Image (cartoon, rainbow, N blue to C red; front, side):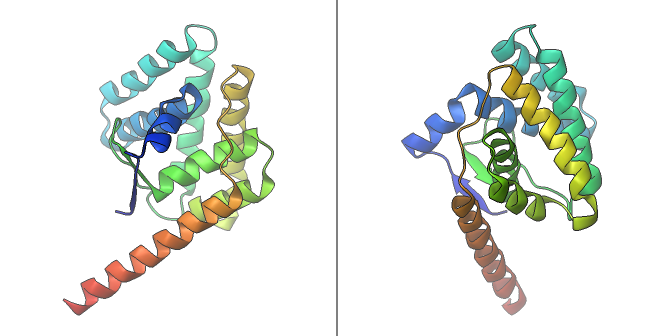
Amino acid sequence: MDRFDCHNGNTAAYFAQPAERLVLEGYRHWAAGKATGDVRAQEAAVDLYLDILGHRGSKTAIYALSAFIGALGRCAACPLRTFEAGSPHICRDEVMVMGLVAGIQNHDDQAVETCLSALTCRSRCEEVALAAGSFALVLRGLGKVLQPIPAPVISEILHRSAMTSSAAAQSTTLH
């Protein structure tokens, strides 16, 4: 699995911010619960949202997260990857999820389009975009706005990920 190390001080601080934690850790918990059927993982997402948001809006935010992940699950071009909650790493798909939400919140259409095309097939983009938009706007309405992730940064991550995947596939074929 392609991963990006988050032990760098600046990167670790970025992922410790409340809005970023809600998206990344919420996504990880909820996706794990959906994939395994383990209700405890989804309860951990609820606890995270209650901890950061309190009772004001946390239920609405969890509902929007659930709808977004549901749309991704139905519409993903291929099964999406994720690390366990609390991991100091982030994979390509997690970057795309964060980039999509950040792009919507920060009005960066290029980032949104780049992330959507990396996360889902063309025929399902609208469904994912609507669910992501609802989630992003709920968080924004609750005062939780992600820092922008510029489209060139997202493109570079996709490029590095493709190169890593290509090299891994070549080495697999050679052995």
